[in-house]
Structure formats: structure tokens, C-alpha cells
Amino acid sequence: MGNKLIDLKDAGFAIYDQLKIADLFAYEKFSDYAKDTVDMAIDTAEKLAVSEYYPINETGDKTGVAFDNGKVTVPAAFHAAYKKFCEGGWTAPAEDFDLGGQQMPAMLNYLTQMLFFAANQSLMVYTCLTHSAGKVIEIFGTEEQKAKYLGPVWEGVWGGCMDLTEPEAGSDVGAIRTKATPNEDGTYKIKGNKIFISQGDSDLTENIVHILLARVEGDPEGTKGLSCFIVPKIRVNDDGSLGADNDVVCTGIEHKMGMKGSATASLAYGDNDNCIGELIGGRCKGIVTMFNMMNEQRIVVGMEGISMGSSAYLHALDFARERKQGVAFGQKTGPQVPIIEHPDVRRNLLFMKSYTEGIRALLLYAAKCLDLKELVSDEAERQKYSDLVEILTPICKAGGSERGFDVCTAAIQIFGGYGYCQEYYVEQLARDCKITSIYEGTNGIQANDLLGRKIVMRDATAFKALIDEMRAVIRAAEAIPELSAYAADMEIYVNKFVETSDLLRARLKENAFLAYSFATPYLNIAIDLATAWMLLSQSVTASEKLKADAETDADFLNSKINTAKFFIGAILPQVTGRLDAIVKNDAAFLQMEDRYFID
Ligand SMILES: Cc1cc2nc3c(=O)[nH]c(=O)nc-3n(C[C@H](O)[C@H](O)[C@H](O)COP(=O)(O)OP(=O)(O)OC[C@H]3O[C@@H](n4cnc5c(N)ncnc54)[C@H](O)[C@@H]3O)c2cc1C
Image 1: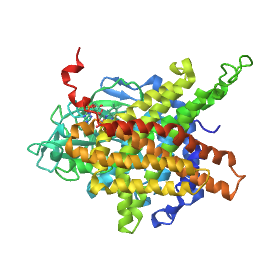
Image 2 (image 1 turned 135 degrees about the vertical axis):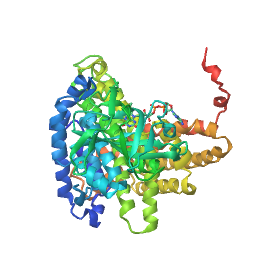
Image 3 (image 1 turned 45 degrees about the horizontal axis):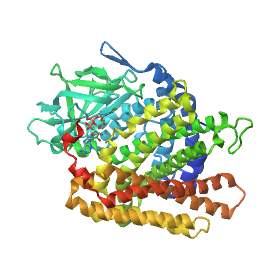
Image 4 (image 1 turned 180 degrees about the vertical axis):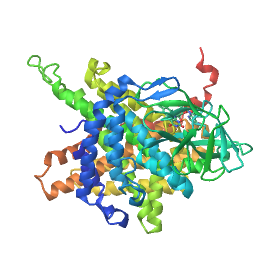
């Protein structure tokens, strides 16, 4: 077996054969890329992930982050790996060449990031947030702001973070209370408190650039009155040197279930009336500024989840091949056999393999749409890719995080009692993975987004674009004798999904409260259909390759076909119950008074 992070043979099949990354090389922006440069980037990322990130993940979990005398100290081992990451140019690989980036296609950028997330989620959070902060400055900053902050942020010499959450403002961002008061020189005095800020403070970098949401006094309530500010931990002089402390104080760090190497800080701004922020993106435009990259960020969080799931699967597969228990199936006596030979263990491994490979392909497909929506010249095509990104975002975020966690817990099950013990890595993966269903908009919020906004938007055009893509794969599969029965099954589920979505759209107008009670089951149906769609698409590609050459990679290609068949035949039918429940629309939910929850 190769690395125990991402099966690169499978991921390579996804980007080259199924999703045809080479299509992108035809555009001027990516004309420097070809298969050998892509291979080289993946290879370099794999080496860094395997040799620097992965070995210190467990150390980071055991050491954790320390908070002493107001100072935050990350696990010592993180410093050298972070430096190598920055030196390797991994802080901004997708940025344009003239900004110091490598102008990578999103699909390649995502695949390399998957390796890093699978290897060490805690350490990746620092670089990821730095990238987000840099991106906000790159898109919305003035020339002065870019000149002042962007260089050190893209180099990773300064860290970055995104400061939204407050005790009373989590999912409800509009409830933010942090205040900004204009100064005469055009800057703002910031006063308030934030919680749960990843990399809100750390000793990994010499400065931290906070991108913060606050409300200028007198501006409207809710999200429409919020503005975005650059608030450095240490002020930056006009010549780029560091100046005085900016009255941003870390008041504590969280002691979390997982991601223990990542500093999650509580922050106080302006306790001494001396915290200065610079407006970025325009007054009352904070939500647009902060959420400009929301789709991308949410897809990245889905990627975090499924990457940890991927590593859990590969560890479990290794274990299942080595661990011997019980005699061969159907025998009363005989030597003990590896547990992979027992039907239930084998089913569990296939469950893990199919979700890991299907959702990974979905995320890489979404990455291709992200690039194409900027690159294609035809307006209708551009809109199609933009619609696909919109509707796929909650499915990718929740699919990667939810199923990634399911795969991690399935891995614990395969390890048996050992899986529950700390010496075995999979329990850390499950703990680390759980956060992905919570941050960047909880999965409950993703479900509301899919039902209330995405399947309705633009007269359901985004929804139709997704269904058209699914049907195109069904058409291709039904023409292949070996896959035609599975294509027919898939078509039945897709049709039922379309009918149920029409019903829900109507019910949103009739009884929205009841309709929203089905938001999460509905999202789960969409996740499973999207997974099946990707696996079916991969099986079509594998069949075509086998038809052209029956020898090369036959085992791998047959495994792709078989994985799709297993998923569509044995897992996808589970959506029927969820679909039936939505159609039934039972009203007991409405009769459940608050007081009924209490004895
Ligand atoms: C480790 C960690 C790192 C984080 N990093 C950052 C960061 O870098 N920057 C930052 O700003 N924040 C960060 N957060 C905060 C994170 O984004 C919030 O925890 C998350 O948005 C949820 O907010 P909350 O915890 O207040 O939960 P609540 O908003 O109180 O939600 C509680 C529950 O109610 C549900 N709920 C709430 N409102 C609705 C609704 N309208 N409809 C349906 N269900 C609803 C939620 O789905 C959830 O299940 C981090 C949190 C953690 C734990």
C-alpha cells in the first residue's frame, strides 16, 4: 500500500480520466500545466505530507496548544513543518504567478490540500486561515492595504484569521456586537470580544492579520449593518516594519475534543481603547466581503472531512488485512483468517471506500466548475458552472464532513476494541474530523441553504443544471451493457428526487416550518445521489478504458466498476425511506409542543 493518506491511484484516475483536468490546460491561465507538471506537484505535496506533516499529527494531539501568561504556544514540532510548507510555496498555490503563486487549477490545488488535511488537520488550519485572510485582502483591499499586508501573508511570515463568532453570534452572524468607531484619520477604533477563532493567536508567526466583522455605531441591525476590518495583532508601519501592539488580547484557548494542535482563541479587542482597524470592502459591505469566498471555503471544509475519512479508511484496510479473528466463513474449524474475509467487515470497508472515492470525486468536480465558471467565454456555460457551484456547495460541505466522520467511526469499528484506544490513530481522526460538520456553517445551516435557497434559486435553474449533469451520466451508463441495470436504478432515484424536490418547493410556500423539518434528510438524499452519480461516472470511464485495453490496470478498473455497483445496489436504496418520509409529510412534528420534551 502507498501512503496511508489518500489513494493517489484513485485520485489520479479521478482527475485525469474521469474529470479530465487536461481540458483546463487549453486555457491561457493554465497553459503552463501539463500531466508531468501536475504529477510533479502531487508528488512534491505527497512527500511533504508524508515526511513532515503526518509524523507530527499524533504529537500535536498529545502535546496540544498551551496558554500561559497570555501567550499561546503551538506544539513545538509544528514550527519546522510550517516553515517547510511556506518555503515550498504551498501557502498560495492557486494565486496568480504575478502575486507569487503557482496559478494551479483548483482541482490540482484541492488534491494537494487533501494530502495535507489527511496528514495533519490541526497544522493545516493555520495555513488555511492565513490563505483566507490573504484572499480577502487580495480581492477587496486598497493598493496600500495590499502593499502593506499581502506579501508577508502569502509568504506565511504572518498568519491570518477570520473573526466572526461571538458568544451570542454563531450561526446568527447578524447578531454580532463588536463595535467600530470612526477615527479622524479614516481608521476605526475596535471594541468587543470574539470566541472560537482558529489561529486567533499563536507563536507560529511574528504577526497575525485578523479579518474581523464588526458594526460601525449607528449602522443597521442584522447582517446588512456589518463591516469588515483588517485588524493586525501588531501594527504595521508604512515601511512594512512591525510597530506597537494593537490591543488585541488572547483571553484563553478552547480545550477541544479534537484538533488539539490548532489554537482556538477567545479574543478581546480594545480593552485599553487602543485597537485600530482598517475598513476593507466598504462600509456595511462586511458580509459580501467576508463571504466572497464562502462557496470555496465550504467546499474546502468538505475536503477536510473526507480527507480524514480517506486516511481512516486506508488505516482500517491495512488493519483488516492483518488482524486475524475467527475461521473462514461457513467453516466450523480451521486457522484464523484476516477479518477482511468476514462479510460484515468487507461490507464496512466497501461502505468506506465508496463514500471516500465518490465524495472525493465530487469535490474535485466542484473544483473544476469553480475554474470553468471564470474561464469559459460562453455566457450560458458560465452561468451553468456558476449554478453548479452554488447548488453543489452545501452538498460538498455536508457530504465531505458528514460522510468523512461516518467513515472515521466505521474505521474505529473495524479496529474493534483497539480502535477505541488512544494508541490507535483512527480515534484521533474521528475526533479531529467531527469539527468539519460544525464550522463554516453547521450542516444544519447547509441543509437550510440547500432547501430554502439553492433548489429554489433562479427559478430552480441551478437544481436543473445538477439534474441534467446526473442524467447525462445515466445516459452514458445505460449504453454499457454491464452498467445498464444500475443506470436504470439510478434514474428511478433521480426521478423520485426531482418529484420530491418539486413537492418541497411547493410546501415551502404552504407550511415552511414543516418543510424545513425535512431539510437535513433531504440534504442526506442529495449527498447519496451525488456520490452515486460520481461513482457511476467513474464506472463509465473505467468501462471505456477496459474496452480500449482489457489488460492494463484491469484489477483497478474492475474495482471502480464494482464499487459503483455496490453503492447503487446496496447503499443508494436507503434514500427510498427518506424520500417516502418527505412525501408522507407527517404532521406529528407540528404537534410537538416545547413542553412535550420535558418529563
Ligand atoms: C474548533 C473551532 C474552530 C472555529 N473556528 C472559527 C474561526 O476561525 N472563526 C470564526 O468566526 N468562528 C469559528 N468557529 C465558530 C463556528 O463557526 C461556530 O461554532 C458555528 O458557526 C456554530 O455556531 P455556534 O457554535 O454558536 O452554534 P449555534 O449557532 O448556537 O448552533 C447550535 C445548533 O443550533 C443549530 N442552529 C442554529 N441556528 C439555526 C437555524 N437558523 N436553523 C437551523 N439550525 C440552527 C446549529 O445547526 C447547531 O446544531 C470555530 C468553532 C470551533 C469549535
